[in-house]
Amino acid sequence: MKAVIIGSGNVATAMGDRLLSAGHAIVQIAARRAEAAAPLAQKWGSAYTTEWERVDREADIYIVALSDRVLPELSKHLSLSGRLVVHTAGAAPAAVLRGVSERCGVLYPLQSLRKEMRPVPELPLLIDACRSEDLPVIEGVARSLSRLVAHADDAERLRYHVAAVVVNNFTNHLYTLAADFCRKEGIDFGLLLPIIRETAARLESHPPKETQTGPAIRGDRATVEKHLDLLANYHDLKELYQLFTIQIEAFYGVGHP
Ligand SMILES: NC(=O)c1ccc[n+]([C@@H]2O[C@H](COP(=O)([O-])OP(=O)(O)OC[C@H]3O[C@@H](n4cnc5c(N)ncnc54)[C@H](OP(=O)(O)O)[C@@H]3O)[C@@H](O)[C@H]2O)c1
Image 1 (spheres, rainbow, N blue to C red):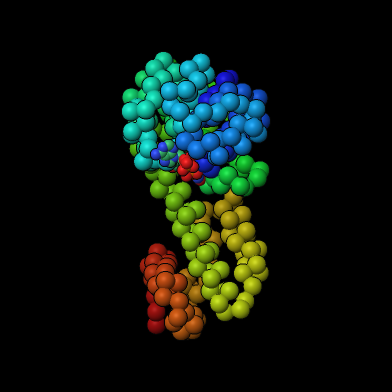
Image 2: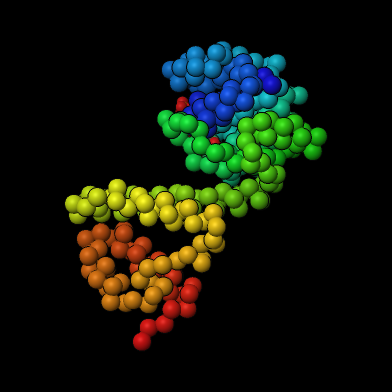
């Protein structure tokens, strides 16, 4: 298929790389900054433009990987009537690009993507289409890019997005606070990597609620108090530690003598 990539950020880069390695042609990249578009165009052997009126009109699919807030306004600049135009956002409705083309849809990667990270990780794709006849076309593209493809309407996609924020963004914030704690306390965050990997790996075979360990589920208040003392100077981490402890105790019905 001939694709135009609109945007030059994390998702544009990952989707372009994946499209190319799946044998599709990227005929053009459209982005507002030439310095971001030109290197991608060179890498993909495609043309590029920084002007909306010069966007190629002959492609089979247009992948709009722009910041969420730009999507509702895109039709002020771009009209691609009759062309298949998909966005990549988890929290925007499929029809947000209806003003750009009545053949609108979604190709949402349920993955955390950073353009500097190679190779592109496994990419579950949630798809949707404004018109039912376009769904098989989007599905065909999606299946050429990933073995994990599912249809999700706006409400379902938003639910996946919420769950993804919890499992990815929130855990990563915990890693950030823990890494900062380790650095300030002069201990090695790297020694925690095996336990991080093990916790994630267990999810392949067990529901998370069956694999909880630690002082909170054991009802070990003495250890919890020692930890809280140690966290006296780490306000954010201490607050989260207390909140998680209370929630784990309540979830598992842990009582205190
Ligand atoms: N990153 C992820 O992990 C991820 C995963 C799934 C879905 N998504 C979704 O994918 C979409 C793109 O995310 P991203 O992570 O690729 O974002 P990003 O790296 O910040 O890239 C955003 C792109 O939008 C462009 N842009 C921003 N404002 C613009 C404007 N007013 N006019 C024209 N272009 C504008 C940026 O151009 P400049 O570079 O010039 O600012 C850049 O090319 C979003 O809908 C996001 O929710 C992201």
